[in-house]
Amino acid sequence: MWAAWRGLDPAALLAPVRGHLPTPPARILDVGAGTGQIARHLSLLGHDVVAGEPVAAFHGVAGPAWVNARLPELDGINGVFDAILVLGMWQHIPPIDRPAALARLAGAVAARGRLIFVLRHGGVPNDRPIWSNPVEEPLSLANSNGMICIDRIEPRSVQPVNRAARVTWTWPVLHGRR
Image (cartoon, rainbow, N blue to C red; front, side):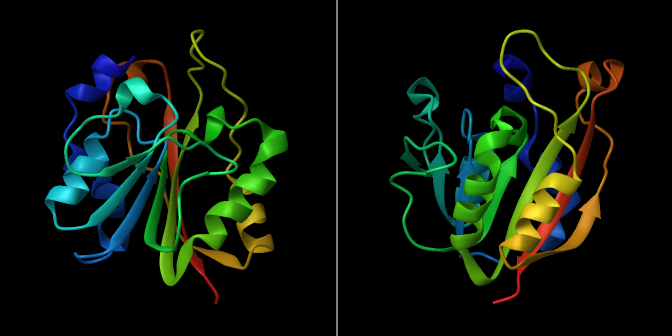
């Protein structure tokens, strides 16, 4: 699973939301950072990046500050962020935990910050737990937490294996109304 991610260009992965990312230097939280490629890329661009990842074996890529954290609590993650990235991992959060998770994320977004999701649809793998990922759910939860959707992007998958499995992605970009 992670080998497929290692060959991908972080700039290409972030291309759909490039215009929504803050100008460096900004404080960015990458929730479920995995192996840290996106967090490292953003660090190299001049951002102050915190990589929140509960799998300690993935920690270690130079650049971001690593924190052993998972939703919904995000223990060890402090302060507010100019952007929070929740890239391709929301489907791993049990639906019962999602309201608390979204409330925690909304509370950590700076007044003019962005909360950017990447929601996976289809192609359910057998090797890890995944729950349904309807786009309306995080949008409704965000609205309940004082956030609005300012963009909704549906790019083609960059991975051929995902395209073959008919996996699609939706990128909601949320903004706080504070």
